[in-house]
Length: 174
Image (tube, rainbow, N blue to C red):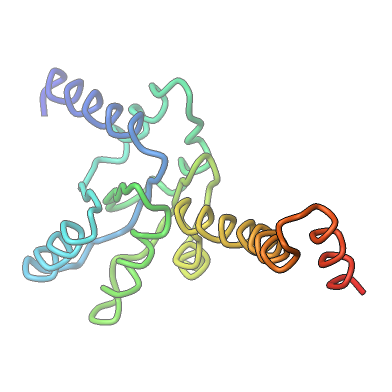
């Protein structure tokens, strides 16, 4: 690979890293062509980007990203590396878990999610159980709706007056 080609690859990787908050680094060494093709199809269905990378070029791209600190994953940049990026923090972990029902690989080397670093394959279960931003927002809205529903029902049962509301709420507390 020429110096110009390396520079272009680093620039492409840097753009990928700047545009994502979810990065998984895995070892896919040993997958045959059919397994690799199945993994790529599963990534496409799950809206996950997959790219085999050279560790030195990935590290240089990480060092070039100004607003994000990837230094926690540097120690994992050894051997074969494939990166997975996604909009959902747990999607690559779930994909890896499902894929490993058929084979031993890919093995998780590290993950970087919103500046939190997870190192090692033992973190896969934790990552798969992470809730997405949308799931967390849904839970918060559900928790907020419960008290609001109580106030609305109290208003309806109290004849829509402040006195009726206060009376209904004090009865519920007692």
